[in-house]
Image (cartoon, rainbow, N blue to C red; front, side, top):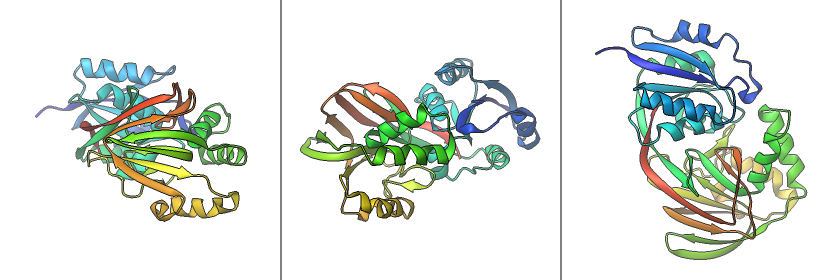
Length: 291
């Protein structure tokens, strides 16, 4: 069996982390008896998707996302439904999917993990045709993602700053939901649609979610008094969000959410502008990931 072709797609600005010298470091840890490696840096929004699509067309075996959940999303969207596998070197602010899959946050350890050549096939979700692999969300967390994306402070500190800025002023919205044919209406602070359990930084909003069960978890966060906020944070980091009286989780495969107006949606942490009607579905077993 010949060597596998691997392309490292490096986002030079993700997570506020410098990637200078990454190629040299990676080649020190990558088993070059297994892989022929190439390296390229992204230069603009959606460039990672384009590079991933080109790699698929060129017969590359593995494309490694060196970046955060947004970079992973772009590349995974290009690889979804193909035989090309995704590798991850987590260099983002939250690293939600990598943490869930047990991929080391240490850069060199993550590269060495590729040498095992062990993989799994995971589900994907789509919201109005946009793919997500970790989490999509509307309401408060989408507003936070939008604010965070436009802030100059990256990493966990920047995200916490965005949360604290939004939490005191954000007003709950009215939503009409249809989940696998069941209709309901909710006044909610936010709704997260989870493929994996966590947003990132080990904050688990859907502790029972799985990327391999063919189901999405619709997590409805109801309005809560501001003094409850520390307890909500505790639940998130203690993997007990499903035990909170302010959290309602409903599993589903086909989901429609109708909101009051067009607004931001986050797709794997990246804000997108979408209309009031959101059609969401799970796509079972579509992406191979080396983990």
